[in-house]
Image (cartoon, rainbow, N blue to C red; front, top):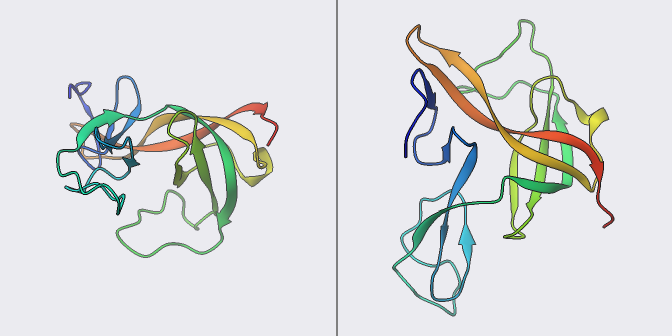
Length: 149
């Protein structure tokens, strides 16, 4: 995985920066996908394969459900504003894998920009900086299009 200089994922091995893509695990025996990419065995109880491959997941999907975080999460969450401002969270069904991935919605968007079926794309945004590198997180950005459910 090649990283853009000065921009690093806050959790290495979960996503790429250029282009933004979540990294999942795929079972070559039965085709089951998983995210985050932490398992060593296929989660399908009928499979049992232990030779998973790391693959980039779909960058696009549709909102399956959503809400906003009205209360500040505990540490290690880093509040972006003082006082705390709620942020939107979306459960997104990936275009190809048809699995649901929960994640924060991109800066500048809130629950008013979402509905079930809203198309979104994966983006990376800065979480914090130590002066030498920006630590990045992945988020879902609404595309302003609806998909019939």
